[in-house]
Length: 291
Image (tube, rainbow, N blue to C red; front, top):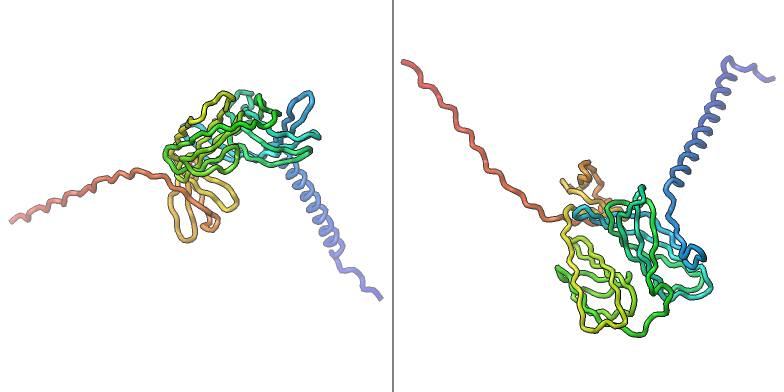
């Protein structure tokens, strides 16, 4: 024989069901909000040429790696896809960045070689700008789909200071001073050295170029400390203190305390510390007792 229901048991069960239903609704709302936030900043995709696209470029997130004299250097991973059934021996673009008012704020050179039919490759774009671009534009070089030239021109690359690592069109090319052989067309030279801001310059090699030339690239000193985290994030600011368990860094005037195990590498700029003279307070004069 079943016992009669206890008083208040039904209302309790009903309340639990209502709570579960509310939790499900809240979870659905949060999931929808998360989806909207993720879709708020989609990758930038460009096609070239516009009338009959042969190449598709998908730009990822721009990450700041250095800042000097009001300009910042960003890097961005770009997926380049050949949409045709023919190989592309060489593709080079100047990438222009615009702000939300469609005003140009920066540029960079993107070069891809030996792109097979329907093939995708990922390359890294280095971009100099006064802010994160809101939109991008492409300008194709003259040698866009031209076959690679057989002729090469030797060029000596120097840096100030020397000992910088050189990349030519994204490929390792040695440590400066170094001699490189460049084919006819557009190239991009990137230099990096610890303790200095990276340097980058586009270079156009013409068919009538004479051998024996040289180019010197000057690297600027970093004005702020650089803290690289193990997840790839790079922070530019002032390292205030470090202990066995934490690193305190000021970024844009806001202090952040990082777990020491989060930090992969730090580069600290040289700072001039002015020693203030020690101020000695004179001893108070003791009054003589009256007799």
